[in-house]
Image (cartoon, rainbow, N blue to C red; front, side, top):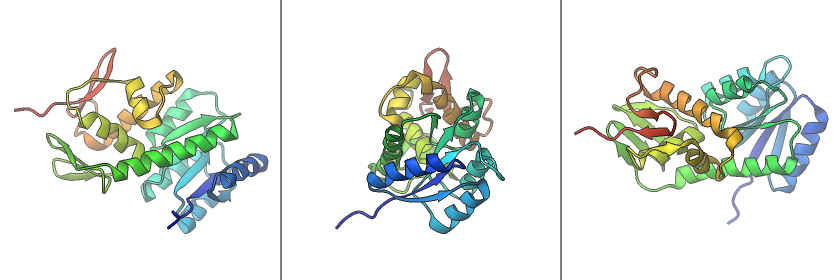
Length: 232
């Protein structure tokens, strides 16, 4: 039995970019739906329930960051941001809103297809992983992609879940940013290491009682991050 085709929503107000991205994604075996503005993107996402959203930051009517924020309120669909903005803070802001990856314009359409496949594989792998993992009050159920801390349910994106799962499997082990990049991207890319900080900040905001004084995800200055070993 053939697996159902994945639907990708491509959101960009530049018609030529949409055309090129659509062509490459369709040749790669995806179903593609499109939107040219932020309000249209939210409408199409609600109607079509895509498996992944390729989202431009510079959109008319509703900005891409606001679209990402609305998509995150509505669910955990993977998001890859497209940005022509030179300011890294815009990309970090998008990642902190829960985007899974970003790619800067101008970009290679083949690279974008590879990123789409990688993010979808990551999401599938998280869901098909083995038994639940616990580290003190933190519990992760890969099959259901559910997270709880002190019995409280926490909603994480697929990327956030994959990062936390990687660390929670070995509490106390320090992971460098490059090692965590390998967990979510499959390859260490120096220019993306700050993205790990953005994801960690977002996970802490959801998990920790006081994100400024984290007790679950600890920073090892100059090295990276770890999930705290259970006490006692």
